[in-house]
Length: 441
Length: 176
Image (cartoon, rainbow over the protein chains, first blue to last red):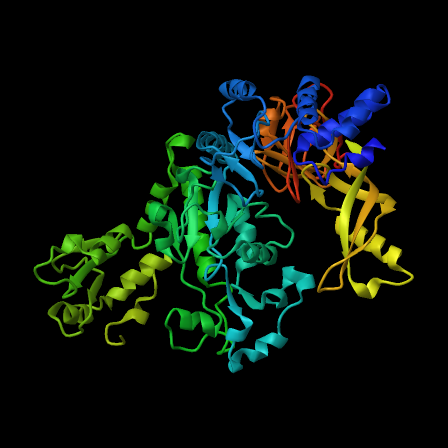
């Protein structure tokens, strides 16, 4: 029987299968062709005939080598090849093997888009989003929304957590999970559920983590068990275009409408103005050690961040403020608004009305206006003065015995350590001055 | 398209399977090895329907394993350019949508979705006509035309289009 002799074990390219089908279909009509096929199995000439037949009958071919060179280039002239899926053009289906495009592996493996197409999509999508009164929000995982540790990094004082882990069947109501298959334990930051729920009303949210893809997916499942927030918008380090850097080039949103929540500013070198820095969440002891803290971790102290007054609650207020400023208070037309400018405005409101005098903080020869702390204070909306007068509200000093410090104590003005400005800058809220008094530190 | 064809494979069998049930063991192993796999040439092997012939076994020196050449009939599935296929939508996004027809993954770019259908984001992203009468979202069934295929060792990728007559949604989960 011809079918048997034409066994695929010997043949080498996909056309043979096509031609085999072809032969099979026509074999009932003409016996001679079937015979020729069975006899000339190893015969090169017959193979050439088969290939010829395939082309004439226009049976679709999927060969690696282009069989018809002229036809290929002709199609390329017409189609711009906006992107590829599994190395095929998404518009014309043509095979493309070059790699100039950006991989969007987080959406679907095998999907790549050319830069022009990404720009086109980005513009269209941003317009669409702004018309629905939303902005983009990019969230980091570790130390921002949650804290994870490997099981074997847990010390004896943390052992009690293992028996307290919440059920993976009821993710929505838990916040401490044991992931046996990844040998990990994960603690969600207090308030994170409420945070995501409220933020999803105002933002289209992405996850962007330096963890690998399986980890990112697993964490997304814990944060978003019903898949409401991060549908195919989980970006891991495997998807980035640069090593050890996070970038917005794989995000389909315009920079002027993106806010980023991360604990490491250095990961976003090109987009520092979009970043809202988060106070790191260290729940497990291993995480504290990693960053060089010798104090007891929250897990060892059996405590946790405050639910209503923690970092996430604070940052949610900042996000809401930025969102309402962007949409309700800016005069420009929507496409011209820039969320980075808005962020600066929000920051300016924090120390509005404060008048600050620095005392022996800067070296004498150093121009005070260009010092980091001075700039920070101004970005926070405070007015910096060189000389004392009655309107001054804060004196910043490291030494309680300077002339200005003593003046502050006498006049009952706030006398604070420079760290107060730094902490206020990073935490986006005016912190109680009493915690930063000069004597204490 | 589905095909019923005869394929051949050399099966290696461990000596512990020899005996009365040798043939059964061989067939069971063949099914386990072959069904659900993909080959660039034939496409996806759906099911083995029968054994044509089992050749003489050849004992391997040193290991005691025996190699049998087995010819078997099977049903294979392979998409072709120009073929019309029905598929289930698995993911919708601003680039277009992904759909599956058995083992085949199909991508339909938004360039190849009719111009009157617009992308709507939200909890359930979808493409909808301006009058809202037709909607493509996750789990919708669509009829599409294949314009490009690539069959890998383990996967089949296709590019599809619904920008043609009689293509598009055939069953909407929302209204069903």
